[in-house]
Amino acid sequence: MTAASHWQPGGRAGLAQLLARPWDVLVVGGGISGAGILLEAARRGLKALLVEQRDFAWGTSSRSSKLVHGGLRYLKEGRFALTRESVREREALLRDAAGLVEPQSFAFGDYAGRKPGRHAFLLGLAIYDRMAGQRARHYVGRDEFLALVPNADTAGLQGGMCYTDAKTDDARLVLRVLQEARSYGGVAVNYLGVERLLRAGGHVTGAQLRDALDGTTHRVAARVTISATGAWADGLRAAAGGMRLRPLRGSHLVLPAWRLPLAQAVSLMHPQDGRPVFAFPWEGATLVGTTDIDHGDDLAREAAITPQELGYLLAALRCQFPALELGVDDVIATFAGVRPVIDSGQADPSKEARDHALWLEDGLLTVTGGKLTTFRVIALDALRAVQPLLPGWQDSLEPVPILAEVPRPYDRRLPPGQAHRLAGRHGRDAAALIEAAREGELTLVPGTQTPWAELRWAARHEAVQRLDDLLLRRTRIGILTRGGGRHLLERVRAICQPELGWKDARWNAEVAAYLALCERHYGLPAAATDAAAYA
Image 1 (cartoon, rainbow, N blue to C red):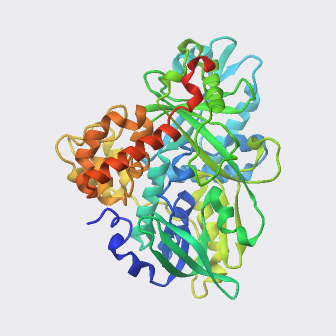
Image 2: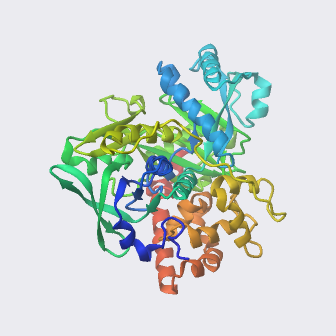
């Protein structure tokens, strides 16, 4: 079985024959929106193909803030319908993707003279609860807040507000949705990009694709083509009209859990501009984010944090946790993602709306904007938009459970909680993953919640074409350990090189490219070597 066969029947060797089939729907873009569209199309009887020019979840969908949330900020803006929709989708994901989407409690300090005020915040939380059909106590006194958030600033502290949202591993969510789509006959291929759209009479009839691995080209005919390329959407639809997107960058820090120990998430308003910043426990580390600024760099290059953003996030941490004296040397890794936001001309990037948008132009449907939480809503809206272009296909397009229920595997060698976690991340493959584990491979990679067996399974079954696919998206070892996990690479090699079938020269080249990528885009920016600049 080849590395790609888990995602496409017959593996890469049968790619030409696969692409020569007639397709109902061609989805361009392998992030969460594209994966959701593939799933909803395939489960409703359409012959659906997804192609991604890089790796699945390579863009925004592996670099998000990892939160599945209803969006409290939208209540403040009076956007109740959007909040209600997001809350309902959050609840659906908590139900259908348990082990992958998990509840996360948040605490927000009530400080004298700081916004937002206690009463306004509690009113918003009451509405938030009502939308989710829940009711909870939200305010705690000063001592209880300090018990929940050790090391928090005590100056002016009166108490705190608490509420619950959810978190996920965004890249694994994409992969789980793709797995579900494949169970209905959907096909997903990575490293296969659109070279140009095919047209007949001015109408889009498919695309000419180029394989990034061997340079071969393929013509794919489809009744409908859907671009779900996020922040890159303007490039594919450039011939149809002017630019409509405003790419915004969100950057994040990863710190060791021991250095910033949190039992729950902490949310605060940044002392400089009042924007929300958060820190929460994630995958065995502590994640801090996020910035929200215009991304003026070339979208063909991976995004990276700037020295200014690093300083901004550290300033927020020092404000909330002054006793810890957190600094540059405490940062294990960084990552930055580019959000696809519709440009409405707002001076402040943070005030741009996060709604999704659909544009149907000459048979090409462009889907962009939106949130990780609402990917199912986006997918169903996309299929409603193209339904008139698919005569003979009828479906009510009512929501159904996002993912099939799977039994939780059992193995006495698993660390506590891992059966639940693996079922969430790998679905029906969890039991086989455990069975494939060799001696010692169900123990955890140090500093993470990832068993070594996940590396073997990914290398064998999950279309890994580059080392960064394995360490930055199939697993998150590259951002959970210092230096991209350089010190772990010999054991990674022993497990994965035979599964991937890479000769020594290929492995060594992949390691060199991966470590260079981590240094440029997942480490500290060059100017940050002077730690005194952020003291």
